Image (cartoon, rainbow over all chains, first blue to last red; front, side, top):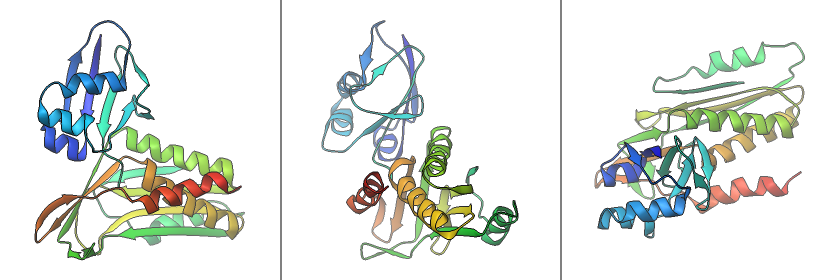
Length: 85
Length: 152
């Protein structure tokens, strides 16, 4: 399956990625498993996605928990806790 | 309901007048304006840059207005939030609510601002004389948002 990924704020800046298209095996995957998969790309990825930093996730523009399941065609985003207003 | 995420400044007087004159049964308009301070955590702030998640941010703000409409008897609500690079004293956000009576408008306005702080995807980065830094989310903001779950 194919998904679209977005990164924001500190994650975008540190990973040097704002968006990417990702091809994954054709089976359901949770946010947590996706984070673990991306963390294997290197130390910076591991620290950003599986380290001490709080990371929130959204699927198709809805905030979700780590056990939410990602489906083919979904838009997934990772970002730090929000600080607007 | 109106939601706008924009780089341009906004005119509070104009926006409140639109909200106020929309219907003759409106008796109250309450608004909150947030602006950039020149100091944060003891350091001078040169500029503040706001990033957002186009698409999700607008949906999130519309959802906050919908929740306020479900909880209080309000006529209409408006949220304008700026993004991009701002200077001290620049306006950041306007939240405004119209209703028949002040109680609903006061409550809905505070609720919307508290939820915006913890739910809407915006991120602030400050430039200080020491360099750039991303702002950390504050526990006080989570607490302010959480208390609405207990209030009826």
